[in-house]
Length: 139
Length: 165
Image (tube, rainbow over all chains, first blue to last red; front, side):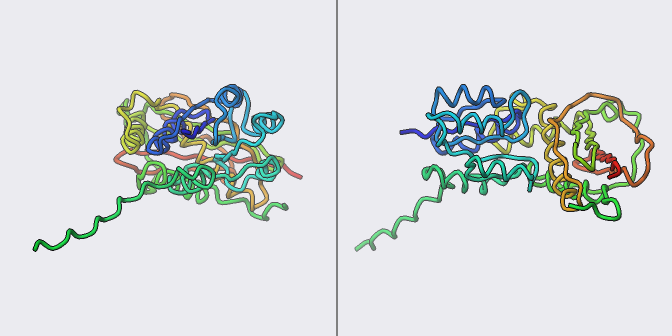
């Protein structure tokens, strides 16, 4: 089954970067610009991973996370938090709400893919194809 | 945490944050330059200004990033090209400026926290304005640095007020 990834971020720049980043991994990618939209898409699509911004208008990442955890259908959805604020005190709250991991923006692609790959094993850096063995010597 | 006895060096903190963000997101290197007056060239003087407000018990202030619009277009092209985009049309320059400012402000906040000045960030606001000159204020509450990047001059200002205990 094709894995589904949902990005919830008010920045179009970040949504675009994430869509491009996950494109090579044959994921279905969905995007929302705030927590409210994110919850609606999550309920409909049941994503395998949510990449959730911390600081958003309308409904921020913490509020969306609380709502997710209250929903019996969505409470186990893995979430990686994206935040501009490294070492934010609210990360303790986020951890209590079962966030798997977090990355600081701007993120390094390899770092985010490695964290996502722990949740969706299909996601890993595409590796170079193995070198074919030498052809047998021509008699 | 108890605040440090001397106020944080906002110019140093901001400069480090700007360098990290520009190098990681845009792969642009930046060089600090001395204060550059408005050039009189409209395209350079007309600027996009990203502003992120910082709110904390012992700190209130803002981080303000000023960019020429031409530079913002260049940055969008870089982001889109590096990520296989079709063209800058699918990404707004205001959005990128807001996000750059947000990331810089996040790193500034992360540097201020261990010095006893924890603060949360508001979502970024982006304005278009003529070249904004420094506002007067006590030196300890201001950090202003100018940067050269890809032939453009950018300005980063951090203003912090430290209300008494």
